[in-house]
Length: 397
Ligand code: SF4
Image (cartoon, rainbow, N blue to C red; front, side):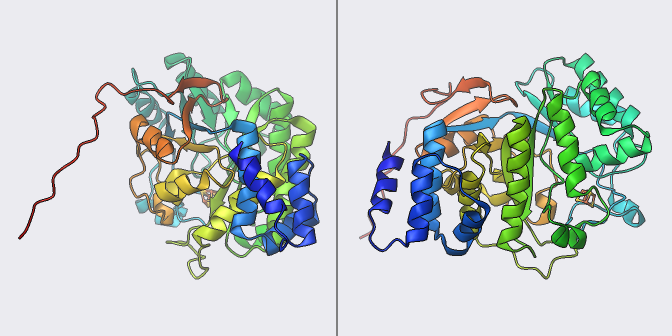
């Protein structure tokens, strides 16, 4: 394995400090790193160092396999009762004219638009409003499954669940059971932001707390179901807050094993109340993916949203621990573009995603939401594949 060779070269470097060498040896021996070692990696681990370790873990787990899926989003509303300082998406109720509120029928019409198309997942997430309550979502999930039984419904975060269960006066246990019975298949990773109260209270103090977020996922996992986790990084938090965040996830994962994927989300500063806070650099983004891959030894996958970080950075991230670059999206989400992401019309055909992955020497694998292989595109030839063309340059004398 090339990644192992690179790791051995790194370990034989006489200039490598004893503390970093100790961490590298732990990674080589599949041993878990500690909280303090996680902080040390953020403070002293240069990009090449953490990248070598993360790529070693990535290739040991997945080889060159790089996953994506074919999905579309439904964002029921961009109005929200909360006021997270980093949110570029929500229009508070007083700015209602700039908002949208889809009815149940409008959402089902979006689902029907994909009839006959080979999408495997609908991802539903948006703002929080009183009319979107527990019975509403239960009915929506039920109706989606009646229309298209095999479509995987990945929907809502603990931010919504905490709100709608409280309104319905039901416990998390009852609420999650109700959602499962209605047809919810999995929970996406949003709403986690930064768990530590020192930061959470400054950036999103009125929505669910870290413990509530973790409790809802734990209840869901207890039902034998799967979910994802995110971390919004690169704003006012310090490195140890990131490690604290991942530590809480790692502990829950040790108990339940229900998380599939960890998704670091880059803070974007366009059109929000934190526009004065500079964004992280690409180097820091890649270091963050890599350290997440090293720290979260009990998570199978690390995902980068290509629509959030751009296609080029997504390609780079595949060498820094990332093995999943999300889905085709088909321009159905506004969450990234409204926050100032490079991709203002996020949509890629399957062929474009496959090429993006192949260009950097990895194996494109279309997966379903639960990481079952749908199609291995390694040797796949698209019907209209063109042979490379070479043109003669004009001779100018
Ligand atoms: S981040 Fe989510 S909960 Fe917070 S204001 Fe935006 S839409 Fe609402």
